[in-house]
Image 1 (tube, rainbow, N blue to C red):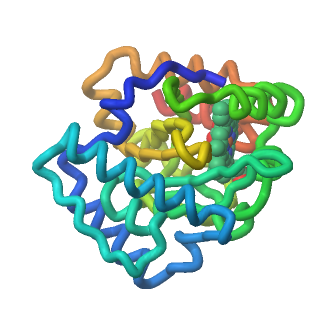
Image 2 (cartoon, rainbow, N blue to C red):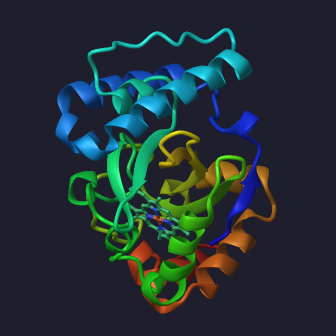
Amino acid sequence: MGLRPLDLSKWLEYDERCDEELSLKAQLIASDYDAVVATNPEGDDASVELLGEIKRFLHEVHPGRSTDTVASEHPVVQASRLAQEDFCVLVKEDTWRLRAACVCFPSRWDLASKIGTTLDDIHSPVPLYDQELARPTNAFFDRLTPDKSFWRLNWTLLDSPVLHQRTSTRRAPRGDLSAWFFRVERQSLRQLPITRATIFTIRTYVTSAAALRENDDEFVSSLLRALDSAPASVQRYKGWTGVATRLRDAL
Ligand code: HEM
């Protein structure tokens, strides 16, 4: 599962792209609300608690940042306007279900089709999830406590730097490395102390592969190693089939 312990003073990350990304979120919420926000009443209490936790985090860790929000908006939307992260709220019922989310920067998945569903349903397109990850992921959610939080990384290669990628078509990146972007998701998982909901955050970083190659001698060899070692089903899902060969040919 690739989970590492998270120091909660590093829960949310702010960088020089903050203003630009928050205004992009505002545009998407205004123009495409139903694509980027999904809520069920079962997630309302936890969303209120989430908003409170973000405000507390900001007071403690980034005291200069404004925590002003518009109270008439859904709390998960207010939460999303305060950070570069996307937020998902999962509530334990018969099993863990996604009950509220504001996801402005999806990596090729569609939020509306996942709201209300379980961890297993959310991950149904992911190869090997069922066999290798479903059981440990559900067990991890059941064992999570408010005093121990975690983070993990997920990455892929795309031919576009656009943050909002809703289409679920996972085709191979076009062109060569000069046109590719390395897209990394820093995901965090924590349990809220009162509602005991689990908060899943997704922070998306996009960097041009050419810039990474320029600044890091190991980049291309590590990339090739990762592409080569992924099982064929994962390569198909990620749109990586043939990419390593194309990269070698181009070099
Ligand atoms: C320990 C927790 C989790 C693990 C180990 C995990 C693992 C994974 C993996 C391996 C993938 C395939 C992604 C790729 O390689 O590109 C994936 C995709 C995804 N995950 Fe998770 N995940 C976790 C938690 C969550 C949670 C809490 C959500 C809640 C929204 C979530 C939503 C998704 C979605 C939407 C996708 C894309 C699915 C699609 O293609 O439609 N994950 N996850």
